[in-house]
Length: 213
Image 1 (cartoon, rainbow, N blue to C red):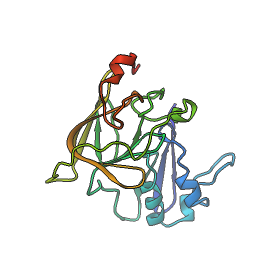
Image 2: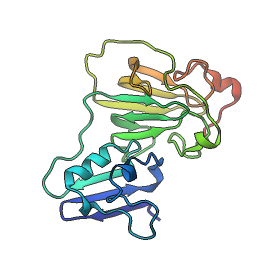
Image 3: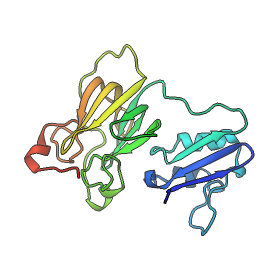
Image 4: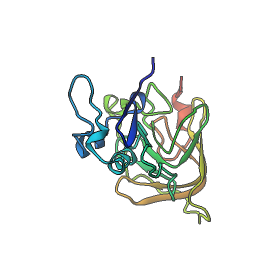
């Protein structure tokens, strides 16, 4: 059974992917008349806003759970001009890029990937960092600061079996407060939750017997 809900107004169609949602609540706090919380039945009302406003709500959804299709001839979402991975304090990675994730289809430009090691939907976050009481700073350690001739374009993510996330392509890694931690075209990020050099992998996954399945 599909977890995708589709609701349309005359100007825009909204797709909500329930399995992607990490409950950041940007949508229900930003426009509670469009995404109505705590109700039974229909809860998505795109007709309560303009197509442009609905698009902006989608762009503010870090997980890509909210997608849209403009029916008014307006512009669809485009890849960002700068690929970023935001490292959340005690939480996951927020990726915003033209994403290519090995083994996945229909990835889009916005996804949230696990870094605590406890998610049951790896490589994606399912909120398990709350239950596992994951603790890790969002400021984190600094990596290389390569000069990026190109700052956007495809970003390939390979979730290594029982290991880290291999990242290939231009990427700026940013702290929770917006500090740039690294600029890179190739790096490896921890996803077991135990690296001493977070957010970067230091091989600890091998010592602790981390498994991804």
